[in-house]
Image 1 (cartoon, rainbow, N blue to C red):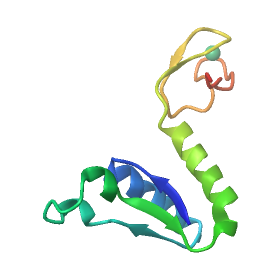
Image 2: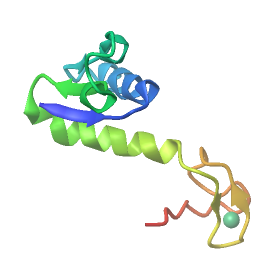
Image 3: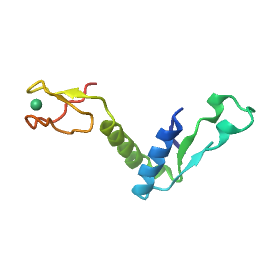
Image 4: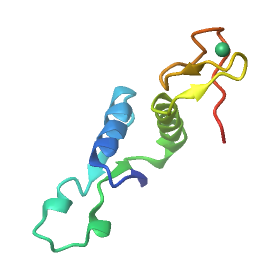
Length: 102
Ligand SMILES: [Zn+2]
């Protein structure tokens, strides 16, 4: 089953590597399609990450969600208003946990 797709091939590979690190069986489809002689439109050949077994999906989606958190933009501490880099899970100034805006 298809788990994830993105125009950005780098993001697709990041997801694949993440799943590999957690021993979740998966593979990439359309890996080379966008270079294929212009026979397909770009929308038809986005690289995709597929799971071998749908039972892995909840775990895989959780990992992807966590990956997105680590690449978020800067955030402002709700406690002391300090600006923190996206890779910080807690405020470097006061230790307040990051609040992710919805
Ligand atoms: Zn703070």
